[in-house]
Structure formats: C-alpha cells, structure tokens
Length: 153
Length: 136
Image (cartoon, each protein chain N blue to C red):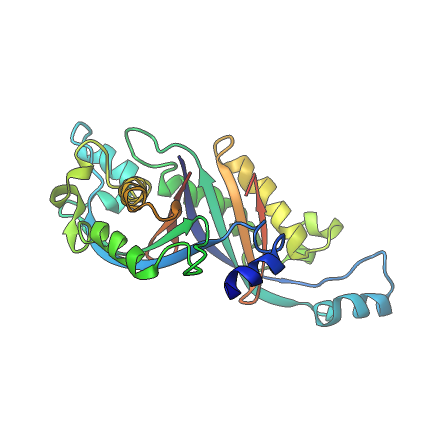
C-alpha cells in the first residue's frame, strides 16, 4: 500500500520514465574465425590472428538489460535471482567451451563478437518471454577491455 | 534487431580553453584552471560505435583492421599534440569536449563506410564524458 502511495505521489516523474535493470555475467570461451572455402592467406588477411589454427580465447563479460512494468507488490521488474538463473542457464552452454565445435550455434555463421551477441540475445529473449517477467531490452557483450557488441530491439 | 560494435581508442593531447570573444579576466573566470596559460593535457578515451548488419561471410559489421585504420588515421593526427597550436581546426575553434567530439565525428564518419558510424563517447578525464550519436 505504502509503495503504491509513493508511486502515486511520484506519478509523472517515475512512471513516465523508462526503467530497466541490468545484471552482469562472465564466461570464458575460445573461438576461431575461419572460412573453409577461403585460402589460408585470405582468412589471414580478413580475420588476422583470429584465424589462428587452434583457436584462441577471451573472457567475455555480458550485461543483460531487462525493462518492463514494476510489480506493485515486489517493487521489481524481475527478481534478480530469477534473472540470474535464466541467464546462467544460457551462459553455461558457452562457458569454457570452444564455441565453433562445442555449441550448435556456429555451424552456419562465424562466432564473431557480433554473432555471439546475436545468438545470446535470441536465447535469453526466448527464456525471458517464457518466464513472462519483463522484456529483454538489450545485451552488451564485452570481449576483453576494448571491444564490445550490443544487440537491442 | 539492432546490432552495434564498439571499440575503445586512446589518445593524449594538450589544450587550453580560451575564447577570443572574452578578455583575459573573463577567460580565467569562465574556464578557470582549463585556461592555464601554457595549457594542460588529457588522456582522452574515445569509444567508437558502428551499427549495421554483420556481413554474411565475415560475420562482422566491420573488420577490426579496417575499424582500427579508420579511427587511428583520425586520432593519430591528434595524439601527443597541442590541439590549439598544432591542429588547424582548433586555431579557429575552442577545444572543448563538445567541439572536439564534433570534430572527431566529422573526420571518423568520412573514413568509415557510409552510415556506419552510430555513436561516440569521448572521456576527457575519468570523471567527465561527451556523447554524440545518430539516434541514441
């Protein structure tokens, strides 16, 4: 009751804003950027050392942003432990894996940062939708300290 | 679905904030320590975001090599320079972050394929940044 009272007082300040919640996750994985139909020189020219024969790895940091209505009772868009469980369920498939071989997602597309982010977005989006709490707004996938990709609606 | 790629670049430069339209005293008042006569410097951190559809064959919005070449060709000119004394544009324009980010936008946009540049964030210090974007 108190919460509704506060919200009604703040109506027009809070209610008119977009509110989101973001949680951070980490996973480590390896990948290789290589197209079989291209020569070694072409692969090297396009992908640089990402084309190295045995793959290489990164520590990925994933930020998952959920938006939606704030629940009257809990004051939350989504319960953070629920979000954690949902995202970990996806991330576990990528963590400590060779993405090209150990996951089914990169048979037809290369595991570039952009494509990994897109796959993660789709997988997390499905799970958030079936959980029926909040809406996946955006993900940010960081590879090392200087490169990141974002996917949003 | 929207996909973007962001890369962080660093350059260091000196500058002094000083407006020709103000007298010495007014300059000191407006810009305080940034008006210091012999200038001062920053390690600028520039976040460059491109947005587009990843190429079907490479899976990349832009190849890392091309991204680096485009941005470095612009910031390489500023790195370890005194902006106001050595960069012609800043002889006419005050080198505030607001103006520097517009300079960077204009130059980087020209070096990248059409309509790829989406957003810039320029950190002047750890405590302040400037942003410029297409629709963000």
